[in-house]
Amino acid sequence: MTYLAILAAGVFFFLAASICLYMFFRGFGKGYLVMTIVILILVYFIIGLWNQSSNSLNMQFFTMLNG
Image 1 (tube, helix red, strand yellow):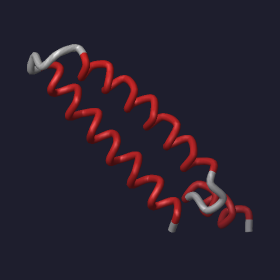
Image 2 (cartoon, helix red, strand yellow):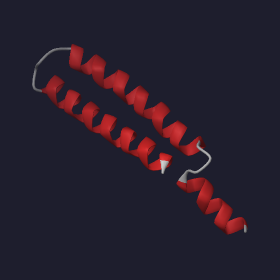
Image 3 (tube, one colour):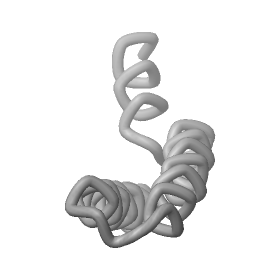
């Protein structure tokens, strides 16, 4: 179940980045653009962690295919 928690964190942070980007376009300041970039970098690392976990969906799928 840890892969679901990692994926949920990635989705949550992607939603946060989308909200920050929206706030930047609404004219609330450049700080929101910086926060968007930082959060998207974090999402990149979270998704990378999700793909490398031993019980990720990709790992289970390839294990199922290879028998």
